[in-house]
Amino acid sequence: MIVKHGKHMKMQLGKYLFVMHLIGMFFCFFLLLFIPYDNHLRWHLGYIIVWVTYLSAIISFFLLPMGMRFRKWVKRYLGVHVFGSLMMVIFYIVGRLWDTFFGLAALPLLMIGFTMIPCQEYCRSEHYSIKEIKSGILGFPTVGLYQNNGLIEECLQRYDFVLSVKRMEEYDDLSAIIGYDCDNGSETFRTIIFPIDENKFKEHLVDIKKLAEKSNAEIWNLLD
Image 1 (cartoon, rainbow, N blue to C red):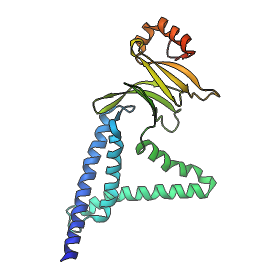
Image 2: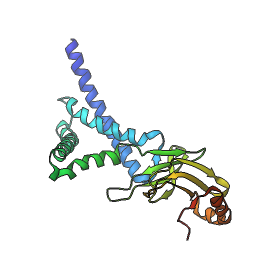
Image 3: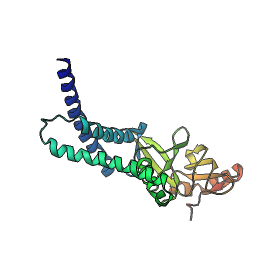
Image 4: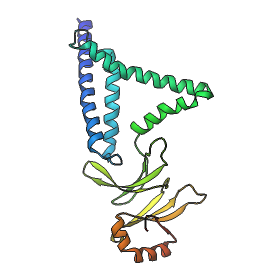
């Protein structure tokens, strides 16, 4: 009796996980279609959805009940996720063991990095934060200015060729922020004044130049 009950619970769990996977896929497609690439859900909710969707597919593959309708097709669909995961593991192992295939080891790391690991936050002020922006395989690392807007972390600006910012101060009246210890690939860290809104930033350019002299800072090169 206990064995039967355990088997029934296992089959039910397989069904529930598959339904959870389908719901997760719906949310993943929704995020891809309606949330701009540089924006994120707050509290890493987008990455949580991706992880739940992925893991529910892998686990449900091994728990689907024998009598389930369309089990054959569902099993094949879930098998794609299992086979893909195994291939990523094989690519990584082969790339690590043989230098000739070192690029294969980078492939799974890139896929996990871009889809399953949240962007790094470098610093935060009262209303804004500066975070990493993932720029693709061939893209140059960069950061962006973010502001919370409901459930969304909205990217207000991209600061290309800036790798990190250790500390920031906001000047909303000038539509500017000062970033301290900015790393842009040079040998020394810099203090840079960045725009929040470019048009308002240009309107206050005279005051911003005074602030730059006072703070011994450079002005971000978005200005013409």
